[in-house]
Image (cartoon, rainbow, N blue to C red):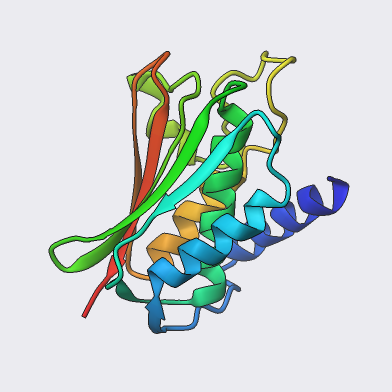
Length: 173
């Protein structure tokens, strides 16, 4: 856990200095989603289900390592905020001129007034929540910056008490 925190702080610092190299190549996003889901299943609590629903055609322009980093972060957050017996679903679909990835959970949701703030550095929706999942408040900031630097967009749809769907889109051919 300490290693993960250190890596997040260092990466956020490098992003702030514009010292992160982002490669750009055509990537099979559904394949990356399947790999990330399989990786995350290894650390999945028995009380949570994780599934993927991917379109077969989903090429996008981006850095495969950074896309996987964003996927793992979004899936990890969804797992952390899902109640026992909850489900996390990762979907891909071609959009107009992009490929869209969505990670949906059945967690506590995010108030509309906080939905943009969750992408800010060190932001925690409820910093007083001692019994809830821990974190640095850097994961979504890092994800936002990586997606933005690959020419994409990231966002969230959420309703308190009904879960959240975090999504990102990357340019498609």
